[in-house]
Image 1: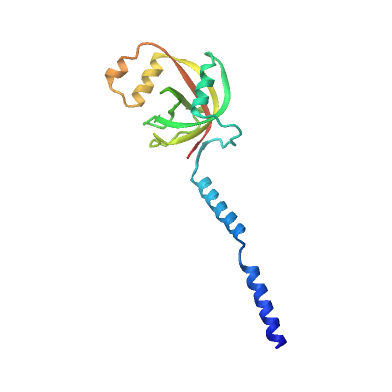
Image 2: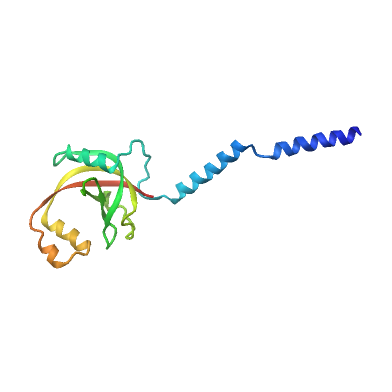
Length: 171
């Protein structure tokens, strides 16, 4: 009888030790979800850690305070309005009030996928206000696939909100 009782107690202890506690199970499931999300992010250029992330509205406010020639190191998140359809060598990001930021990539060192229009991106790099000459504006219009008539209408330089990205994360 003592043997049966000892075996019964040992069995209960072993079964109890094997079973995961509900909290541990939840943490394990949460970790798996986070790992999957991290795996779904695509990195381009230099990887970076987000310490302070601005929204597109906050970024627009920052641009409005800048003069031509000013620049600031920043990380912000926005929707991609358009990407260069030839190489992915530039993109425009939506700011507030239908305003856009023109993004290029440091040292022409990386490109974005050609099909990422409408996706959300986090960019890290230098924001600055720039005056873009007519020939460059026409080049961008050509890359974007605009008609000859639209391209010929470009006759004056344009003040733009520009961004030189050192890295990007595509959600």
